[in-house]
Image (cartoon, rainbow, N blue to C red; front, side):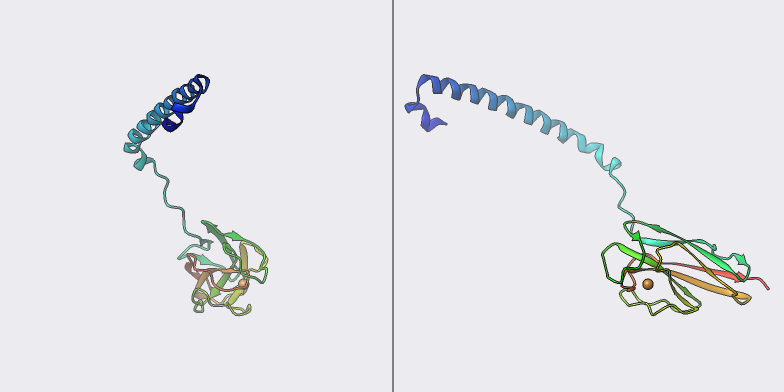
Length: 167
Ligand SMILES: [Cu+2]
């Protein structure tokens, strides 16, 4: 603004003066806000939101150590930023469906899970339950894994339960 002063009319000078006052008031207000913000951080760390939960699956039922009948309904629950949907055949980030491995090793993250067998199940409908029927008496293990729409295992938290089918 300074270089303009010598060649401006008094009217313009008035306008400039008015603008300057407005600008100063704004600046003062900003400084007050900044001062208030500067005082706030003392309380902020305690109020900080917890880190977002990682995507994963929990086996709600059966519970680890349960005794069951020959037919075992597995109930699953998801956590974190993942959407459980019908298998689409394509990989979309954050979208998948559940897979169960019964008494067999689960695949590594990123590996495509082979087609369904008695021991390897795709819950491709997007459901969160599946019933294994006619399990033999004795101890069994189930591992739940979320896989993408293309059935590749998602790098998400897995869950494992061991249970016993009664004689
Ligand atoms: Cu699948």
